[in-house]
View (cartoon, rainbow, N blue to C red):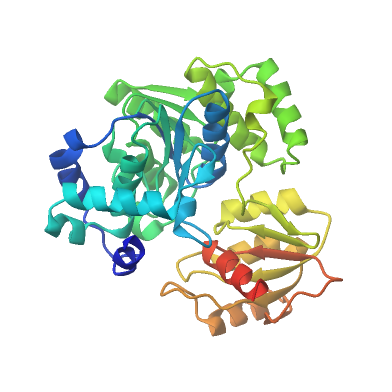
Length: 381
């Protein structure tokens, strides 16, 4: 069974062997399908940008796969095919097929993410296009081994410092090194990202575009129309713009109807009338959320991984926080509750442990996929 096989693999690692996936892929690549791949790298917005693009391509008549991570409630969410999460039956079939391709030692050695990346390619066997989202970083990510038609670069910010580096220059360099042919950069908050992109373009003889040089006035008006039609938070306009630039780079015309089924749950999603959930987990996500929700106060259902800048995140969100309710999460990376409580006291934010939802309060569930998962499981009992 696939789930039992994956459960035996750690979800997170203190160190990563960056040579393993390229070696395995090089040996088996002739046995794998080779669809046209649009690669997504960056810090925030990969999931929504990918779903916008994949949904539009599918609506235009193409067979499309979207590989994203992590999932909220069920692994199947990671592999989307032509409008639906993959079925359990299709997963088991692909798992057996991949087991027959890999040597036993390879199968056991591959990380959770490396194995599921190969699994997704098996499932996307008959796809015209595959929108493939990097899990961590860029050049060393498991998704980087495939030949790519185009790379879309979402906003790059400080995150995953233990693996990617302490500065925006280090982080942007390792992410942008994944580009092999052509890339479109979303609007960036750090000028260094553009400088590194220009340097790499000359060094590697690749093409780097800025998204605002790809879309035109007509596109901007259509993007605003789609944003309003789908009731998207304004910050998602930038993700939608990047997806539209991808369509234009592929030489495809689009209409607003092509995005009608493109919402991805967990991104400023109205779960109930008084509950908003968002899987963001870093300072850039917190800033986007503040801008999207300002003007109202929320009970923040929150927790954090210990490697996140949770103090800064809470400081950013403080203007919209009525109080914080700390929810327990199941993760080895989880922050000690006592440390979070101390930080909240320092920030003079009222807190308690999460118990239940009160109908007269407005709730914001934010902090990570694990926080949203824990909340949904408790909410549904």
